[in-house]
Image (cartoon, rainbow, N blue to C red; front, side, top):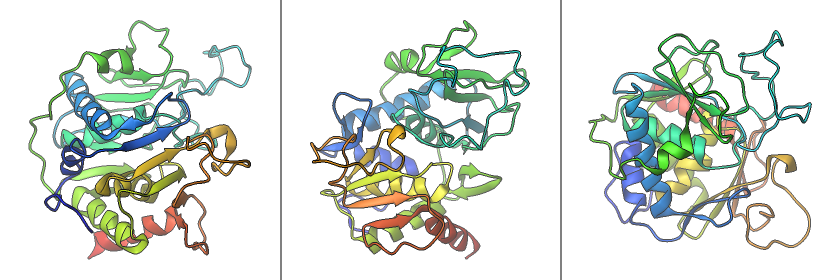
Length: 301
């Protein structure tokens, strides 16, 4: 992997190096302007410090229910039916589960890893962790002692903390918790991956697709697929490239018409991370599932 910074040992090293990079870390449809590297990485630090207040700690856990910030209920009323038998159950069959349309869930995932916690992006219900971060309009059932932190909204329930509001006033310094390269960082569907394994797979993606700071990587797969998190988030972050986050309403981000350089018309991507299970046949496409398989292989070695 080509870098002008020391070889990273943890995901926190990627974030710390990113604060000194120029350019855009993320270009998301719902954001008026791209997220600069300095702002994005500083907010990851702030997210880590915020989550530490809610009991997230080294060798502990953080649950993150990943979904669109702008999602709404199917009735269009903007309200949640608590009498529905499915209330409080995260619907993993929902096509929006795992997709992002804003930086907030990524800030939470990365922030949790900076504390040395294992971040579970497919938590069981009720969520049994010190804290859970989730979209404000997604009903989530928690066990006693689990702090609910919602992004979007703002949340209606006074017991639910508002992620963006509390992030704004948080300390913009790197969390001091020591993290080791062999510590677990990510859990998905009961599979756990260490910082070391995630970084090895990140380096493989960068080398295979010759990524650098001029590239724009379209994140068109749910990050509940670990390979999508590696190829669509960590790989761009490691070299100063830009992650493009399309509008979830547009499916995989493939739209027609001329590109204006924004994430809502992302034809100018140099690499697309897609969730298909088959091997990619387009040199500009990487299968998230294939990267997940390489993660498993790396973990076994």
